[in-house]
Length: 317
Image 1 (tube, rainbow, N blue to C red):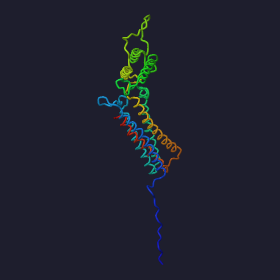
Image 2 (image 1 turned 60 degrees about the vertical axis):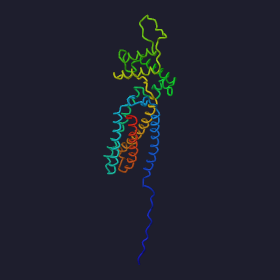
Image 3 (image 1 turned 90 degrees about the horizontal axis):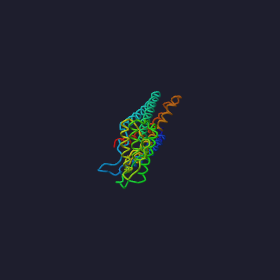
Image 4 (image 1 turned 90 degrees about the vertical axis):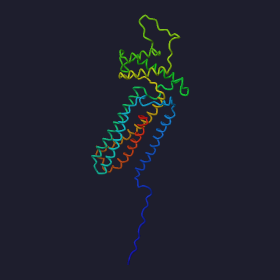
């Protein structure tokens, strides 16, 4: 007697058969995409809202704020290479080649550290040239009433006077000597704008201010400072005087916000790679951690892609 064959209904799977960890990582990356989209979008809006003079935008060009294009290009290449090595680490684990995977993870960690070292060099350059939010002289031109503010102009002038006074009294803080050309030029400017008393010979009467004494506006001071800093830089000296850069404070705020948050994300990824290496040293890193490496790689690729957007926006345009 023949028996009827009873087939069990097949289980229905809705959507893609993704592991929970990968779904969680993609949801996290969606929030990160929104975060960096807001930062980059704000930067683009602020940049495009800057007025133009003679058809040229007043937004600072890369050379105005001492951005070195080749350093940014090197950092881009470093991150792209690190994305390759983390993929190779995942591939090696899938082939049960744990030692090879560990080597690739070590290379990825080293490349990420190199990226942060280069970024630290760039930040040091900004510090040496006082290209910091709130310290740059901008909105100093009275002929542009929409942006000019007396309080900002006077504040900048007072800041430069204080910086020049410190430089003249303590040249060692700028690694200068009293007989250097940069020091002499800075002292001359300090005397010219009233930051320090003019030098006079023994027994001479103090100089009297007359109606003929020129009055230096904040814009005049800014232009003098820019010239002084440029000439000192040719000699290899960093005077650490606040430069005059129209819309420089807005640029610096955008720059440090975008690159700073990106650097924090790079550091977070390096912590995870360091944990992997620590596990390997203790013999606890095996082929079963393939998913761990894959999810970390997804995060690392996102960090790489963000920098690919930041590099042309900040360094090339």
